[in-house]
Every structure is written in C-alpha cells, then in structure tokens.
Length: 266
Ligand code: DGL
Image (cartoon, protein in one colour):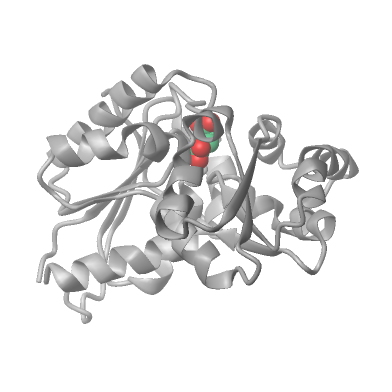
C-alpha cells in the first residue's frame, strides 16, 4: 500500500485524456500531472530532443516522490520509453503497448490502422509493437499533424476538421482496416468526427482507457495501490509555461474544472 502519488506527464494538455481515465478507475490515488507546455509540441521534434525532455520530466516527477510514472504522450513513448525504463528504477508505463492490446482484442481481420504525430509514425514503434505480438497482422499508418492544433483550437465538431480527417484517413480506409488506433493523446477528442469518417465497420481504439487499466494492473501486481478508503486524494497540475491557457483548455480535456495549476521550472 502506498500513498505516494502516480506521476503522469505529457508535452502539454493531451495527456489529460489519460489522466482523466486514471482518475476514473483509480479515484483513491494521489495524482501529479506535468504538462510540458513551454516545449510543446513534441510531435514534430527529433528523437534526441524528445528523449531529453522525457528524461527531465521523469526527474521532475521523482522529486515529487512518485511511485510510478505514466508517459501520457505517444511521441515520448515512441521515442523514449525504453531508455526511461533502463535509466529509472520505478515502474514506467507508456501509452503504446496498452493501445496495441486494445487493438488486437478488437480486430477481427487483423488489419489495423494507426494515426499519430509525425514523430510517432516515423518512429515505427506502433507497427513494430503490433507485428511483434501478431506477426500475421497488416498495419497501415498515417501522420496527422494538423489534428493537434485543431483540437487545441476547440474545433472538435467542425466541418473543416471533417474535411481534413477525410483527407488523412482516405488512404487507410482504402486498405480495409477494421480497427483504428488513435495514437495521439489529442485524438480521443475528435472521436465523433473520426468515427463518422471511418464508418461503422472500423473500431476506434482510445489508448487512454487501456493505459489506465494497465496502470491499475501494475499497482496491484507490485502491491503499491492506495487504500481504497482514502477520501481526499489530491490532484496536482504542474506546467512549464503559464497556467492560464492550460487551465482554460484543460477543463475541456478533463471534463471538469481544473484547480491548483502551478508553474514549475524543470
Ligand atoms: N502528446 C503528443 C502525442 O501524444 C501530441 C502533442 C505534441 O505533439 O506534443 O503524441
């Protein structure tokens, strides 16, 4: 049993979709969220740069005495998860393996599509992870760099977003995928448009839910879960740029009011 918090980090706001799912299934846990808003986006940066940021983020969270770290960013997971795991000695969970687990459970035809940032797609991590576990699967991927700014602009249900989504997804859909992994923390917010564009034959996989499940499993396995009777768990939000914008948009991502956003230097 451990009252130490779980640390969750992302390049900015997107990881709040993962934070929300963790808070939903593990309401008794103390949570510290770090949004690296001064250095967002990670999706267009090189592997070396993203790995360095990820390392610094974990070091910051360790100062907050976390018992476990969730890399709630697909780009950081794609580029840095292995290195983080070999460098730090607490459990570290990324968002890619859980997303792949969900996709392999859902697919019937084993034809799987993946969308994400440029960095995530160019890393090849999703394809490698699917093929390692299901060598006969077919994987098609597409980078969708305009989605992150559209989501941050609040254009979740907009016709321009729909046209862009069609343009990005056409190639994947032509390959007859039956499952589509939303391989970026922002994309769950576009679920309505994406499911409209992809059509009813395609199951969308939101890795946030799967990741929260994986977190609960690790806590149980290692016996470091918080007492279920903890009635006042805390939720701390730390950001590396001004808290104002984060607070305003963060409410939309988490689905409830965000308080206590602190500015931190890392
Ligand atoms: N959090 C990033 C991801 O999931 C998207 C935003 C960014 O590019 O930093 O890949």
